[in-house]
Length: 453
Ligand SMILES: *[C@@H]1O[C@H](CO)[C@@H](O)[C@H](O)[C@H]1NC(C)=O
Ligand SMILES: *[C@@H]1O[C@H](CO)[C@@H](O)[C@H](O)[C@H]1NC(C)=O
Ligand SMILES: *[C@@H]1O[C@H](CO)[C@@H](O)[C@H](O)[C@H]1NC(C)=O
Ligand SMILES: *[C@@H]1O[C@H](CO)[C@@H](O)[C@H](O)[C@H]1NC(C)=O
Ligand SMILES: *[C@@H]1O[C@H](CO)[C@@H](O)[C@H](O)[C@H]1NC(C)=O
Ligand SMILES: *[C@@H]1O[C@H](CO)[C@@H](O)[C@H](O)[C@H]1NC(C)=O
Ligand SMILES: *[C@@H]1O[C@H](CO)[C@@H](O)[C@H](O)[C@H]1NC(C)=O
Image (tube, rainbow, N blue to C red; front, side, top):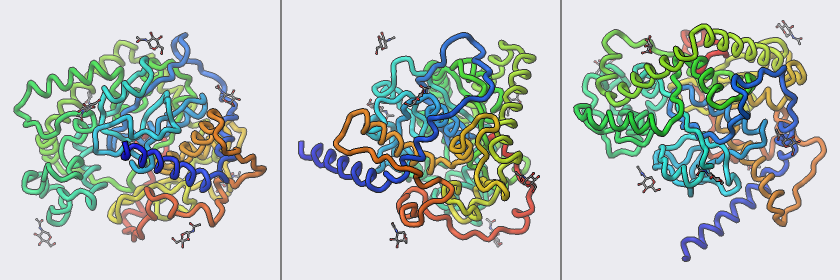
């Protein structure tokens, strides 16, 4: 088949160029494999850790924070993470339905998959181990929709054609602006349902469809987390996977600088417009609380407390006794720590290292410098770093003709060489556009890094 040959040739070519481009960075990406652990808080159950996990990353639901946690878990346990083939971007060719062909061959066979995709169970089953646990996260529809509307206001035509970019105007007559046939319309109607593989344009009167769909999700997913109850959800996840407390550490990622408070009446309109998502959310919020009740409220509170204490210890240990500073993404000088900015009207904040800590302190709490940095590394950059390190391992394992370069002190993350670490080498993280922050935004109290997005 000529098409297949061309595809393979392209694959070989891009793999070689990826290798040539990035081999200088391999030595430091390897360091993460030498992580001592914090004082252990073993899994709440006696079982060995479960390591086959598919985390469906939904949009604007604290899922970047979860993805970062999964990436770090994988690195710490030498697990393979399925990553998108470059032509898919840093997502699995979203919004296309997931296909195993979207996975980069150097990341096969995987234990973990967590990048954005539109869920397709039969395709995932072809790829993932047969004991894979499926997990996802949902967010309350009104705050989620406000977030989508603001994040995608320049990318999604349905939002762009609304006069004055007004959420109120959109919700007053959604069908006036929404065009289901437009590719980017996925952000404008029942986005959770769509991400989960459902039909987002099913009329809300079709109660049977909604019921069936919810049943299906319940069958397929072992846990549906709720972003409003993120730490409680992590407690359930820890029980499900038998992970350690230190596997659950996180710093909140991919947040906006400011959020608009929805005026009264709007949440009901959002729910009416996104009726499928609202049903999903209500169902799985109720089921989350049933599971927490089974575990016992005292027990849950105790575990949440342990989790928060461990997180604070780790973060303070990493960043010289201070929390990393939340900053407007556009002002973050270190490219590796600058989050992707969707457009000039929304400011995604990230973290800058504390001023007097030119690099994170290794040792305190036992976390290595690289792991400390990865706690605050945005999705696009981390995906790239992981692809590089996994490609190296893949080549070693399959003894390809390349001699893996052994480099004494490799370029460090904090002092990127000016030539090779060029923003042009990362087509999926375009340089952030200039933003003039209004004083109101600048003066907003800084969100705590300890909350999920
Ligand atoms: C991961 O791999 C490294 C290097 O091969 C090894 O030293 C380490 O013990 C491994 N860790 C685990 C948890 O298997
Ligand atoms: C999911 O993948 C299967 C192939 O494994 C395909 O037949 C099906 O159409 C896909 N589902 C969607 C919704 O695209
Ligand atoms: C899962 O796969 C393993 C080997 O890959 C096999 O031994 C086992 O029987 C399979 N389990 C199920 C439930 O299919
Ligand atoms: C949009 O803004 C203009 C000027 O501020 C105002 O006159 C107009 O009524 C607004 N339109 C809507 C639909 O809110
Ligand atoms: C989630 O469910 C709990 C328990 O029923 C309820 O108290 C809470 O208000 C719900 N949260 C939201 C955001 O609907
Ligand atoms: C860094 O500066 C802060 C105050 O700006 C101070 O509290 C802290 O002790 C300093 N840390 C180090 C390691 O010097
Ligand atoms: C870096 O980017 C600049 C401008 O985009 C370009 O001129 C230059 O060739 C790039 N350097 C490398 C090494 O890619």
